[in-house]
Picture 1: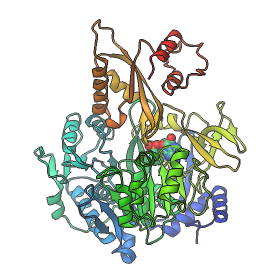
Picture 2: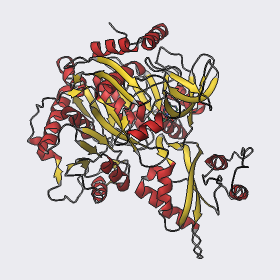
Picture 3: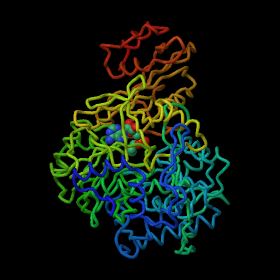
Picture 4: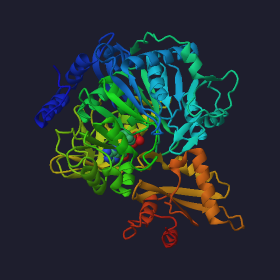
Length: 635
Ligand code: WT7
């Protein structure tokens, strides 16, 4: 037997060693023993980071939904696969068994086929957190269509950019969504976005809020009647190991969002293996990840990883504050949740609400707590540990990225001793390292540098959709023969890693990855704006908030600054979504620039963070006088 389930620290070190010494043997054994294949691979791994080209399990044939659904039917057919908890606590939860999931995915897959979707076609999914979201993802995978889920908080413009970039033939959406006490008209957003898209032939619409919506003749179709006529049998499409499974967009430090492409076999093997170990999942557990399936966390650890292990995975439609801030704990009690995985921003927001709504509920079912998406500060870590885990539940501070597909550095609960704010040790198969500014690898512990990964792992994204050159430049050019993460990290005296944050122009706000460039582009759309620069600054709840420095055009007229601020945020909401709104907007006469015309964001970051004691070298600035002026008017 391979070492699928790690139970002790000694075992971890042994398994880790073998994963580094003999990676092909390690992953080959795991893949062979724990998954179903239609044909075995010819070669476990071939790779070349300089091209870059990475292939896992080449030659193998499989369908990921057979691994996530069909193979469980004999032993777990009546077990709950997806436990759906609606926005409204008075609406009944739905327990979708593996058998029912099988039928519903097949029906949906047949509808996709009837609508002309074929292997390799791209399907955009723009849905709230309702069962149809997970089911449509799996239905695409069933027939080999490439899903591109877009988080339903993104605006029409952001949606159309993503639809066009990957040339989607279909959009799956709903009439609307519930979000706490509010409803959102998703279909209207889709209609608006499709005014800018020529590639979409069909829009499938799920009825969720029963709102009156426009249906465009010939293009828009209600899903329900189509499902009713569809067979519950659908033979899975047999896929090559390296066939794309999905595209998921993530922000870059410049330009358009990057459509990260994940492929089938390696992604499956790694998300399943990491899910099992990161959460120490056992058969009767009820696992809950609070993320949205619109992000990688939801893809890997609500849908694919848990289902590949035959787990029960909770899907929550609502928000933590509705009907009150006790909702999360209410759900933990109600469904006897055993593993709970959330983001530091949620923990901080919940901590602010006090303990009364925590103490009201029985949280004794919990065994493992997880954190993901941004560094967890010490205070939040202790609050989580003391009040939610009652000091009995290990916290796994798991570091990873959209690009990595799965958890890379994280404690294994009940195995790795935890240390607040440290993601601790790499998972088997993951070879992290720290690089210095000169491109040299930093050896030994107690180090501080840029986090890179030296060796491929099965779930690394293989390319950026339609832009392999950008993939190469973003991840494989800064350091020779290394994958560069964009994060800084420390390594302590025992080799534990602590992620310190992004070292590029990506800012993590409330756990959402935002590139500054597209937000600046949106701000610059305002007719009164000449130029802008956006940086992050520390925020109590959100981790980081956005600070915009804006130069207005000199039109001679005076403008109301508060109105301008509102208008600028409105444009951001329209172009990207409310998550990218600026917390502070400072109007300024100039921005600090180098002689080559580059904005010196380092200085703006310090000013926004009120950390101006040492601004570093400003002598290379073209306009040093502007710095004092900005400081005088900051915050
Ligand atoms: C960036 C990736 C991975 C799923 C959610 C985010 C930051 C992620 C941690 C952590 C410190 C973290 C990094 C990373 N990040 N997890 N445990 N500690 N920082 O995926 O949107 O692709 O963002 O999130 O900066 O590069 P993503």
